[in-house]
Amino acid sequence: MKVLIVDDERAIRNSLGEILTDEGYEVDTAEDGAVALDKVGKEKFDVIFCDIKMPGMDGVEVLGKFVEMGLDAAVVMISGHADIDTAVDCIKKGAFDFVQKPLDLNRVLITIKNATDKVSLTTQNKALKKKVYGADMIGESEPMQHIREMISKVAPTDARVLIIGPNGSGKELVARNLHQLSNRSAMPFVEVNCAAIPSELIESELFGHEKGSFTSAIKQHKGKFEQADGGTLFLDEIGDMSLAAQAKVLRVLQEKKLSRVGSDKDIEVDVRVIAATNKDLQAEIAKGNFREDLYHRLSVIVFRVPSLDERRDDIPLLVDYFLAKYTEGGKARSFSPEAVELLKQKHWPGNIRELDNVVDRLLILGGEPVSPDDVKTYVNL
Image (cartoon, rainbow, N blue to C red; front, side, top):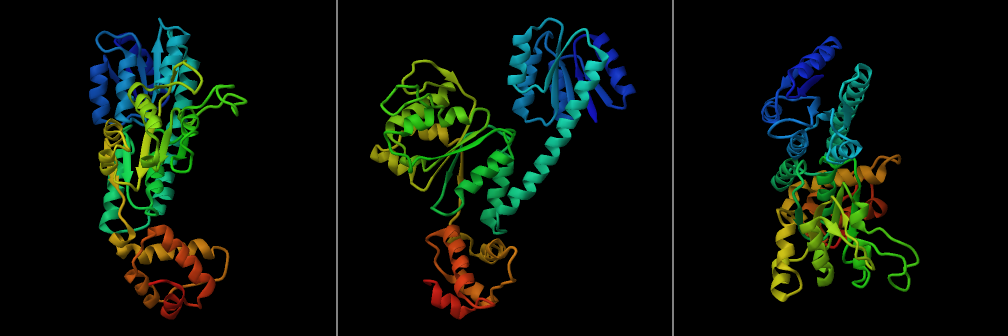
């Protein structure tokens, strides 16, 4: 395990460094925030001890830079001048722990053990998530490889994302991968289908309401933005959201604050918003159905999910995936190569969702193996 100590006091750097070296840790030091940022940009550290009171860039600002960089390191803040409010503020901003000066040997050793355990667990979780969620991104076609590459670049950031693509193409799966491979993965992933909620209820659903704010409001309700605090909010079918709700969403994105229905009190929220739609939002803007300023707020990064017709080469892999899904624990089933070839030639207006249903139907009604005649009989080619 490699440790970086950031402190403007040489005595602190030396004494803490000697303690940790004696405990078997590899230790490096930095005398200020600028040097620390330079070092973490070149080397990987597992734990960083960072003083708060330093000339130039203070420790809280340095912590913010570490978070922006998406470091996996556990950052432990140290100070002899801070109060409990400062400690809480540091934890909220991403610090793993807070230790007061003068440093107590036992406290330091317990803290670094907990920090290294957390780093190991985080590394294991990220590897597992890449394996599990990557497995659900079925396909080796060029469009799918492009989607995976974009996810790997965008997921570690807090950039807002707009996912466009036809129904059934896998937009929600892209959103979940972005969350699970992000630094927010331990926090909630909250999904809202904007098309499924009546326009008169969408504001209460998103922003919450106070008791008595309307007839059926028998108790206080936290909205989806508050439920997703610290995590990711997925606004599916954003193109169907009312203009009134769009205005409030825009305010939250701009100010990171919201007020519940029936309240004038502001509530701060830290939420990454990912939106998706099958509509042409530029056309909706021209019709006056969607706010242009909200579109620009949401579309920092735009993902275009291809239709199944655009990635026909992935159909054999998808058939195998759904075959395993529907026959797990049951008798072995298969598709003949000729049957799969027929499926590749079909037009897929329902995309992957339609293919999922077709495979399920053929396994129920077809023979073993599923033959071309089965496909011709039970599928609308």
